[in-house]
Length: 58
Image 1: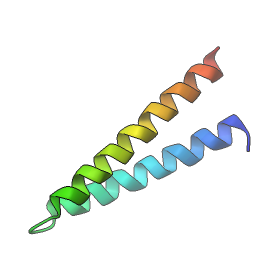
Image 2: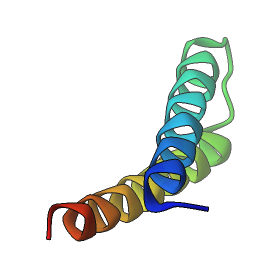
Image 3: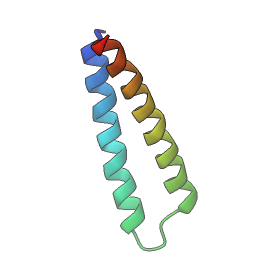
Image 4: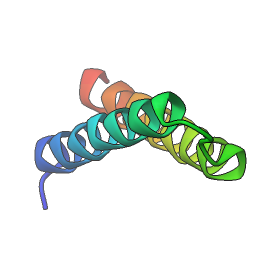
């Protein structure tokens, strides 16, 4: 997998997590532990995206 393809895959997953997070937060009686898990995963993906983008720019 090329670096660009990996970045696209990570961005897609990040967007899907954002959608899932929004649904969970707007759902009546949403699961706080699930929200926290989604936020952690989203942050992990964001960090990886930023790291890879720095490699592309170098």
